Length: 193
Image (cartoon, rainbow, N blue to C red; front, side, top):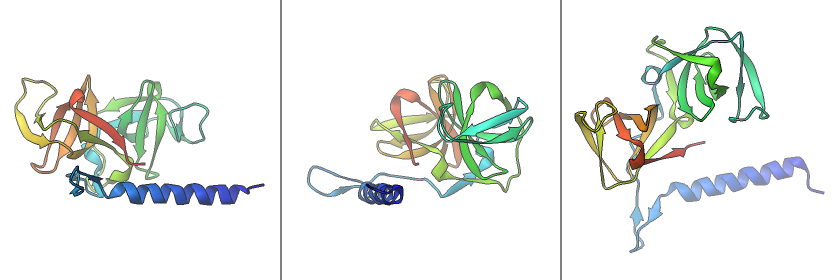
């Protein structure tokens, strides 16, 4: 009989092996390395992400967007958190007080217009990455094809997801030190965890 510790050891070893072998980028047809253009820092200011507040007396935080998943908490009514990503009825949030992320039910929180401490940062390992799919992609000032272009991204570049609206994603564009919007059909989400 295999012990649970051994299973955990082999699972972690396999995950490390996959991470190391996938981190080197892909090979092109001639066998050379085709490296992704990435502009992702280790941390970003928390104020780049939307601030939300807990609207119920007790808000539990789940490790997955699933009511049967392990959870912790509760967060108290009025506590400020940062929105990282969203699903159908769940929102992935960063909890500044605990410096950890997790999933909460969408109906338990609401958007507010409040900034937290400008010194507060979020490790980017918790954030969703958007991978550019097309050869040239316009990053716009607003979520509209009529909005001014702030940057032209290239295929295989990666950016951090900050927010989303309809079928548009807001990203941080470090090349021009501005936020911008990209049409959802031109990118694919990739999770770092």
